[in-house]
Length: 252
Ligand SMILES: *[C@@H]1O[C@H](CO)[C@@H](O)[C@H](O)[C@H]1NC(C)=O
Ligand SMILES: *[C@@H]1O[C@H](CO)[C@@H](O)[C@H](O)[C@H]1NC(C)=O
Ligand SMILES: *[C@@H]1O[C@H](CO)[C@@H](O)[C@H](O)[C@H]1NC(C)=O
Image 1: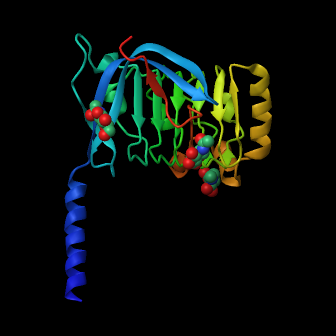
Image 2: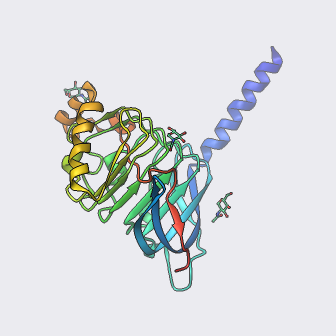
Image 3: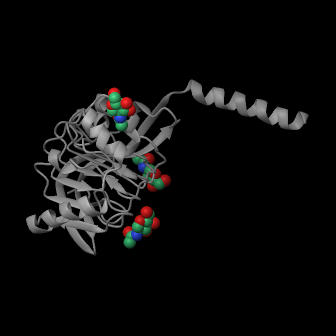
């Protein structure tokens, strides 16, 4: 008895200590990288020679507010020059908050194999220049219609290798600039469209048929922004059909 009480006490104290620290830090490897993704052994170039942070996460992830990014920048560069953020194989169930305070000008966000459960429009709202997003290999099940509502320049969406079952009925309405979308290896669909309008049209039809929104998601669309919180769990994006976006030819 007393042993288990002690264990519980220790657990409570430990949790309390953890809760005192609300922050996470990005330990970045900064560099000019060329970004590409591999789909069926085909390399698809995404983005050339962009100043990037490939981040490891330290600190307590429960609250996942970013309070610091490392300062080991290349000469003459600073955080506001960072165009690409990649987080790979870190434990991150929720989209990190406050990223924009450090990296306000991101055009690409890759969060791959991080156990992310959802993406919501407000996660991406600060990044109005966003063009490329990848959330490959996470735990996203539902993708709401409005996840890219505030990102009109998105051309590339990578959502492969998630357990996606449902996608909002108006998902594509917010993706007017979309050229490439990868939905390979999901629960409801295994398909992609890579700069091919015909494939994209077919994919949209297949999404509607195979990944219909839940009743809740339809209601959410109707309610508009009112109940955003309720659906934060529901959104997803993937970028790389294969599990990771790779930085190739780094230093070019
Ligand atoms: C991030 O973690 C990986 C694997 O542990 C390591 O190889 C890499 O050097 C780390 N990067 C930074 C910037 O600390
Ligand atoms: C498909 O996704 C699962 C995780 O959902 C992953 O374990 C598996 O490696 C993926 N397969 C391919 C071919 O990418
Ligand atoms: C939509 O709005 C109605 C009425 O305000 C509310 O009862 C319902 O829970 C909302 N549904 C969702 C999914 O937000």
